Length: 127
Image (cartoon, rainbow, N blue to C red; front, top):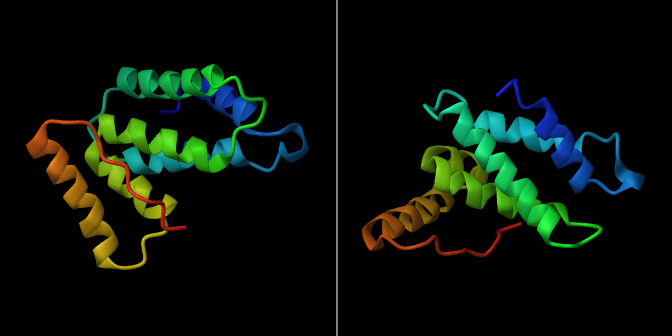
């Protein structure tokens, strides 16, 4: 994902209030996405589309400020559609999984989604 420096700037620009810039939020979020996708066979074009989709969601919100929790949810939803393993990896850090049951709950959601053929069911954030 090293070629997405321009997108990192967009995410950082949209995500961080000027009073909180230069604290690494945008780069930490992008690093988390990179870790989630590490060693996964996901085409770079698909990752770029995912990031563009997140940016469009942020831009279309019309909000001057967007909470990091909302951005995290956008990232989780996008990763869920791109690669379920990357989604679980990201969710485990973002939602601060502390026990195996946390993983089982998310894996159960994915299994139900696959069997229903429907859209993802949202769960409550455990933070």
